[in-house]
Image 1 (cartoon, rainbow, N blue to C red):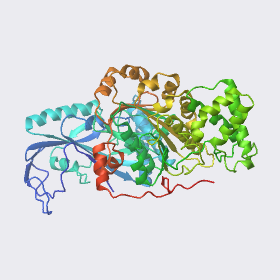
Image 2 (cartoon, rainbow, N blue to C red):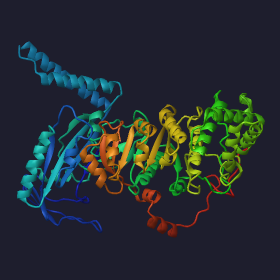
Image 3 (spheres, rainbow, N blue to C red):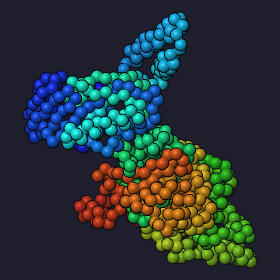
Image 4 (cartoon, rainbow, N blue to C red):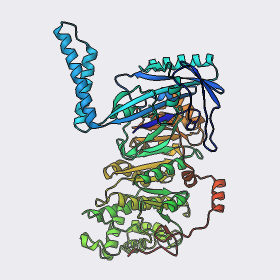
Length: 627
């Protein structure tokens, strides 16, 4: 069985039945009897050249290879500035036959080395190196760590006339020589050389070389030499390499940590790219949770059967007093500490020590009034509500505690006033599912940081559940909203620091680079992101971005002139893995990821209206209450 890879720069030709003697110069007539087929009407086959209508071509067979290769070593051939067809024919060798061939080869090499030593000749280092390689390969096959393949690599060069072809042939052979490849012309087999590089799956030349699994993987023709990181079980296609025809794939779960940061100006395509990555991670079984400030992920959630919670809509609530079912002995204490963070976010300022103490006493009293104590057996009782906390603070205020009175005054609008729609009742819809989207579009700006913190807390409860360990991705779109408050920034920093321990990744997406780079906590979030994505940047912040990510002058120029969807991947904290890419999507993916108002209006006009299922979307009528 053959597994051909054919890489073409100018399209493909169909299967062509050929007639004529292919081993001598002459003319071979080409016919295609398939209905609607097409092909050249005639071609002239000479010793090394095949003349086609409108051009000529000549082929090479690679007969010699370097001893060691790196990933993406075929990239120079694929990016040659001309029409070049590269075909890689792969045929697996059965393990038993491979072991026998290796033993014979090793015996010949050992025999040659010993015969030379017995005759008093100097040691042949090439033979010794080949013997070592054969022994190492045989050991790998014996341990089941790889397989053996017969590989043929062929190149066909096209041009408009003979003079141009001669020039391109000289350049391609020089390029192959610089890659330590021995390119031999297919003399008197020009026709077979051309058909071998067509996508027919037939190797008519038969110039093969034995490759092991690692060497063959490095020869994969669509990898990018700019990315040296090892891919794990969840690689994601980021897009095409902006400077070549290779692709850029990245696996955030194979990096040092699973976090990422995406920074771009408005309209550069950051939400589009983030939705593509989330969708492709869903293909691999990764659970995804999204903080969506502009309700851009609704279509994606509906398409994949996810859970969509429209925070701020009537009847949709999240209770911050809910206790997670993790079984940890300090669950109640952690919940009390989170409530202090929540109150600081509501106040938009840190709590004074006396006010913090008053709040802590009120929180404990609120849980106690609901029958919840340090005994884990009481944690399944219905959780108290924010109005209950305000009531406890009011009781403390009656005793003369001014700090409790101030806290009660500030929390009153969120308990029973204008901002009470989100926090005044028990949780309506549990955030469960393979994709959970918290939409914040219906919330006023004053409540958005609070809602984002509540959504992150609900997500974090699932992430830290020891009984449900799996790969997860937490997407915080427009993270600058949360970074506006000290409490929110600190909470986001804690997520970035500890998410790796729970097999989760935090994806921070923002269009305001200044807010993220101007504070120490924002810089710490960037430092704890092994995956960094930069799309088009504004001239006003390019210097800050360049200093934070150690960009070269060429990379700065690329980010200033990048088109929509083009970006720069900085892997391993801005280390050696750097690649410029252009995000690509299939038509179906584009339909789910686009944010263009014109396209969305056209899609909504052509699509039938679908009533949301109560298990996938939280609405006022179908949101079940959690006891």
